Length: 52
Image 1 (cartoon, one colour):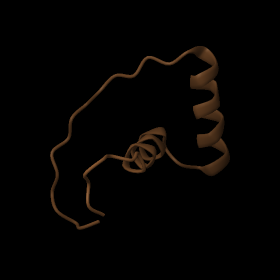
Image 2 (cartoon, one colour):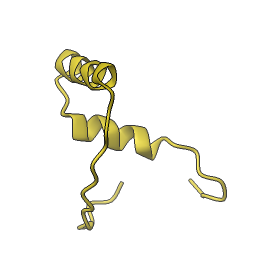
Image 3 (cartoon, one colour):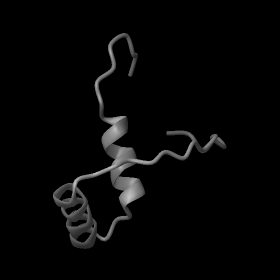
């Protein structure tokens, strides 16, 4: 990924209690912030027609 300045769009995600707890536990275990974990998961989503 390049070091370009990128626009930020804030979103709100509603999670069930178990989902939020699972995310928090993962973040504690890995030492990573939830934002980074979620961003990485989104980047890994398959999108048809997208060139990698």
